[in-house]
Image (cartoon, rainbow, N blue to C red; front, side):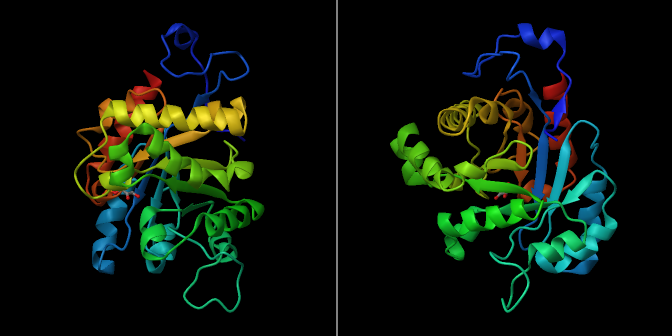
Length: 280
Ligand SMILES: O=C(CO)COP(=O)(O)O
């Protein structure tokens, strides 16, 4: 089912900056979604409990929340998170179980009642040479197995410096091969400009909003208006408790994929920021 929240009559009259008309057909509010990507952290089991505590402190009543632990910690975190916090591995094998040394298969995730998988993170693309073809294969496998997928995209600094057109050229290239798989009920896009990841340099709210709106526009044209209106797009890249309120106020930002700040208690404040912005 597409995650929707009821539309208040008042919302229909708000000046909406999104390019899409608020026709009854697309009048579907997107439930906020925030993920915490712990990457290859923490270094010890002893520190895991503190991070799980940060997650369990979050209010999941108005927001979907997921956490991406490192593969070794996934099963343990599954047993420790409260109801409403989803565990979302950071990657999956491109095939099922079998002779794939070092990999984790979607069947093994499903066996742990895991529903979400993150793929396409820029660190996977950069350090592990994951191509758009491979990622399309992974997404198909995830969706075919009945699971849901967070798909990360984003440009590097030289492309951003050249402007929106070259930024979008990268995003489009990363979306092209999966466009036939995009489904608001099953896929979330995480727009993470690489230059903003782990740098402390966040995209401005205007930059993030403009890019999210362009991504939605491209989906409207190349998939469908319904898909564009319903699909959730998270922002990632030095998101924190301080910048989350302003970013949350942007109409096309539906949540965050958080790295560094997901290792801190402030993760909860990011969840609160988007939850209150979208239910205001
Ligand atoms: O890569 C990210 C989340 O996947 C973002 O990382 P930071 O929040 O540390 O910039």
